[in-house]
Length: 181
Image 1 (cartoon, rainbow, N blue to C red):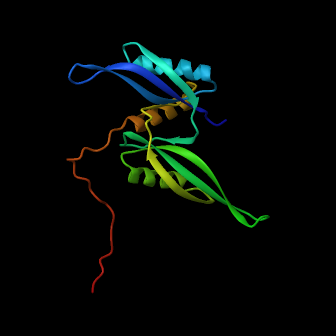
Image 2 (cartoon, rainbow, N blue to C red):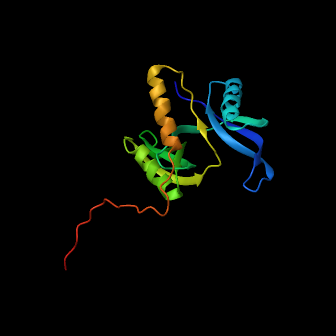
Image 3 (cartoon, one colour):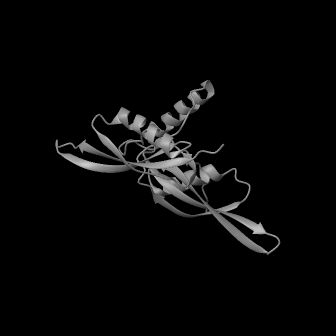
């Protein structure tokens, strides 16, 4: 059974660095089977993060086919992937679009991560659009069974990993042949 993702908007008061308070409305994703379960799950998840009062202002079905967390990434990007199929009867190409939520640090990395996710796809595809998503966090459903506990831990570890700091030197392990003239 495939996951149904619900986008839940949560409104709450946040204290900033200066001690001032401001009201924020942020979208989150939860995996649920109904609107009622989505509301219950977002209330449980947000209660762990927000100590003050919060309000669920909107719940709607999100049109993401797949969600892919990646290590050392802190933002979510919406990748539009067009699957290309050839219709032999009409002789025309048909495109069907699907949307993925991919974790990355920038658009280029989101593109690379989308390519990585699609590498085992048998058919042709193109990636016509990638944009930064306002989604703050993703809460997948796990039943609590032993094999799913491992999946939840792996998902949360990937999601929570932080990007490398800018001052750290990034070592490039790619090898290039030198061309002698």
